Image (cartoon, rainbow, N blue to C red; front, side, top):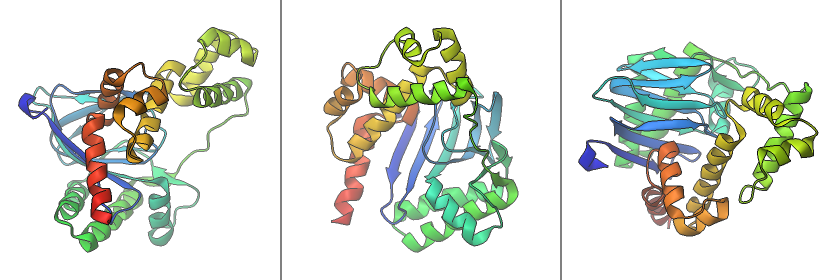
Amino acid sequence: MAGSGERARHWRYAELPGVDLLRARYIRKTFVRHTHEHFVIAAIADGVEVFHCQGSDRYAGAGALALVNPDTAHTGRAGVPEGWRYGAVYPSPEVVAKIAAETTTLRGTPGFVRPVLDDPYTVGLVHQVLRAAEEGNALAADTLLRVAVTRLLRLNGGPLPRRDVRTAGARNAARARAVLQERMAEPPTLEALAADLGTSPFALLRAFRDAYGMPPHTWLTDARVRRARQLLDAGTPPSQAAVAVGFTDQPHLNRHFTRIVGVPPGAYQRERKNVQDMRR
C-alpha cells in the first residue's frame, strides 16, 4: 500500500478499551457500502473525503469531521485527485453513552445529528488522541477522547431514532437479517428466503434496503467481515476465518475485508496481536 502512496494503520490501544483507532492516507481507495458496530469519528487532515450517507453524498474536507452512527450504511472515496488523509477513532456505543451520561443532558441513545461537522478544534483533538495512543500516554489519550466526544455531542448530538419494525415489510426484513446471520456460511437464495417469509423476492429486497440501507447480499458481505474481525481478534488465522464466515478462500476475504476495513486482514490481526502481547 505504501508504494502506491496510500498507507493505513488500524489498531487498538490497550488503555482505551472499546475504541478502534485508524491513521490513513488514501488516493484511489474506495470503501464499499458497509456499516460499523461502533461510531465513526473521522478527522480530515487534508484533501477531501466523499461518503454516501443518509441518502446523499457528503463532503468532508480539511478541518471537518465525518461522523457516522453505528449500524448506518455508508461508503467512502476521494473527493479530489490527491485523495485524503485522516485520523479516526471508533468508540463503541457503550463508551459514547457513558460519556454522554456524564457530560451532557442528552436523553435516550446518543448519536450524531449531522454527518459532517466543520470544527478544526475537534479535528485536532482526534489527532492528539491518536498521537497519545502511539506514544503510550494513557492519561492523555483517555482525557482527550472524552473531551472530543463531549464536544461533538454538545455541538452535534441528539437521540438516535428507534428503528421502526411495525410494518410487515420491516418485520420481514428483520426476520431475513436473522436468517442470514444464522446461516452466514451457507445462505439461502433471495427467492428461497422470500418464500420462507411468505413474500416475494422484490418485496423483500425493497423492505430490506429500506430497513438497513443496502440489499441482503451486500449486508451479508458486511456481516461476514464483521464476524471475521471477531475471529481475527480471537487469534483465528485469516485462512480459517475466511471459510468460517462463508468466503470461498482467503483471497476473497482479503478483498472484501480491505474494501470495508481499509487494511488487509493479516495487517489487522498483527496489530491486535501486538496489543495482546503488551498486556502480558
